[in-house]
Length: 54
Image (cartoon, one colour):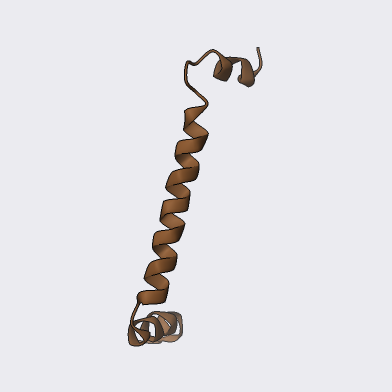
């Protein structure tokens, strides 16, 4: 039996892709908002972390 047959037997399985898309979209929007509203000094500090030798 193929995997798709197992999924078709689950009632309401079609809601899971929609929930995951909404969660991903919310996370992406929140990260974008944070990136644009973050103070410039903090962004500069974070971007220099990999180059810091101490």
